[in-house]
Image (cartoon, rainbow, N blue to C red):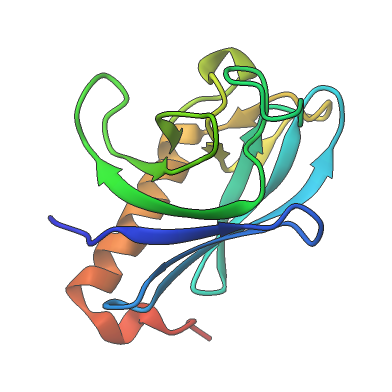
Length: 155
């Protein structure tokens, strides 16, 4: 399956991450709800429909391997190679390379990437069922590519 590059917008103050593909009307949004010295957490939605939680490293001045990503607009693409399997890679993140939304449950599973999960630990340091969450993201995007009418938010 080929998905055209997605444009991604990240806002840190109202804190939303949006990925748009004008051809398919896809909108991926991450609304950050919690940030402390341990993590940054939010919700990932596709076309306005909540899909899963997303955990990032805490904000540490955009230092590579240590920080969540800054606000901005980024290109993104689907990757399927390597040990991480299917994932979304953001491109053009300032001073960063290979920032991805990929499978992982703990901060140690990431070097600055976004980790999806279906639930969050009480101390906000882990997401759970990350493989299932990335599966839901993929399934939703596949359905939109298969039938573009699904690009609008579902009731």
